[in-house]
Image 1 (cartoon, rainbow, N blue to C red):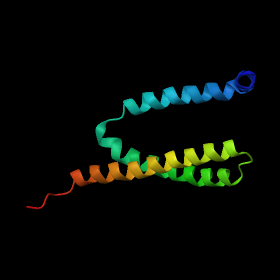
Image 2 (image 1 turned 180 degrees about the vertical axis):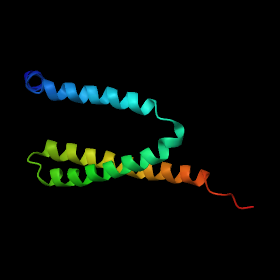
Image 3 (image 1 turned 45 degrees about the vertical axis):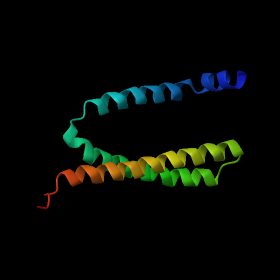
Image 4 (image 1 turned 30 degrees about the vertical axis):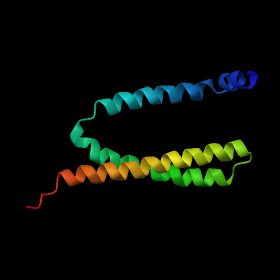
Length: 101
């Protein structure tokens, strides 16, 4: 418990920035019109692809088993985000295609 409180005290500025970023992201995304969700999803997929590449590099440099497991979990979640984003984008683009009679 002492290590956790020490971590929060030494990194409080970074934690504050992460918390503010989460609230800002929620506020921005909640005000996006529905018509823009497909382009934003494509952009998010590109960003997640970069995160996956960075995660692979970081997992390769992990020094403890905890870092390795945390990195693998993060990579799995980023890959789910990319796959889900492509599925949602594909479904939304199908809505704009002309239907066959």
